[in-house]
Image (cartoon, rainbow over all chains, first blue to last red; front, side, top):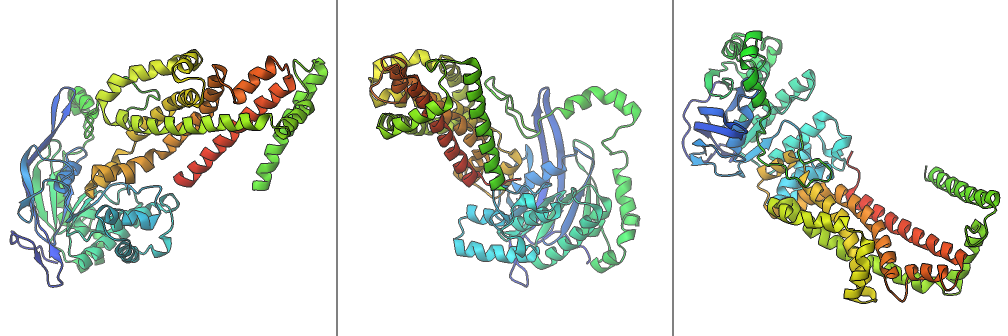
Length: 313
Length: 250
């Protein structure tokens, strides 16, 4: 499909099927994290738009702040500077219009599949009957109806990630944020998941922001690919993928080699997180400090810990 | 499978009794040093039949159950507070550790002085001894809840109250139940110590009597056996409850 023209009309409006559509606007967003020696800037004045109903892939080297940007968009983190808007209104906290799919399934191990999918519905205060109906529908969509009573540890990695997607869709979000959702899956399963994601998107009228490490994945799934620089991340390229969906399916093997992929790769060059020998020598001190940064946790261990397990991770 | 397990347990018990008998026979010990297993078994049965054991066991059981309930509930609240607030942890933990390091044996006479020689002093001692392991287990359990799960729940706009009941408590439950397993066996110890420090009834009192004025060593052993059985049964109950509410998690 051709890229949706910029910019979108402000304010939520339903599409021809009555679904609400939402756009994302990222406006000059900066964010840093406190470390032992000062603040570490992770994102530096990042700006781009995701028009309603578009799929935008976010690609960049490790540590460039892709995941942080997704958390800012979801309201889990607040930006130091700039703002993130859904339909023109700034995000101030987790938003019911947003469904988040994390890199790991993050299922509750003591709940079966159905109860895991029902979890956001419970939190939102849905009645038991409504929950049961919605969970049935969601499990059908992801093809796990027969596994409703199965606990996560008895499911395969792919099944677990399907559940996580169903859970993110539970409240009928108009925005899906996906943080490398298929990175733990094997290559073929991953291709299938990407195709299913696109089908799901065609059915659900969602706006999707997808963080990925894979150029072919980005080119297959996205309407546009935003390339971020190494930390502190800023936008170095915004590449439109000028292929329609049928073309992509027909040329799956060519996606990694096509000229769009080539363009993205050129923008990524010199932006790996694996430095050359000279860079390593020059940067070793800084890198080492950077690696120890507790990105999301500011807690300082207290002295009282009989089991010595104050720090997870 | 469960037949196999029952067989294992029975075989181990038989081996234990045979070993005991062997020691008595080989060492030729008099009955007031180490009575033979059949002598203890006989005294155990007769003590239960003639009403020597039953009221004492009932008293001790009551003290343990009340003390455990009181201590464990207080510990859940305290463990939550310790997990939530670094300030509370910093201010309270020295006292907690000091209280735990002071032998309960040394505290028992004081507590008997304060709370009398009735039920209350034993309940307090049991509660004190149960408190520490459960409070620490609760604190550690709540602190170690997977942050990624917390973030997931927050992305669905869970309130702090919802986080506690739907995520933190269930996630911490295996640890908390581990603390309760330790706690319930310690509660039995606490009750016996409390009864030693002053009391009219209970298995601890009966141990004193059997060793002292009655000089009935088989009764002493039969009482010890009752105490041990009480601990095992209570432990199994906690373990069963744990299996019910924690369930398989893989």
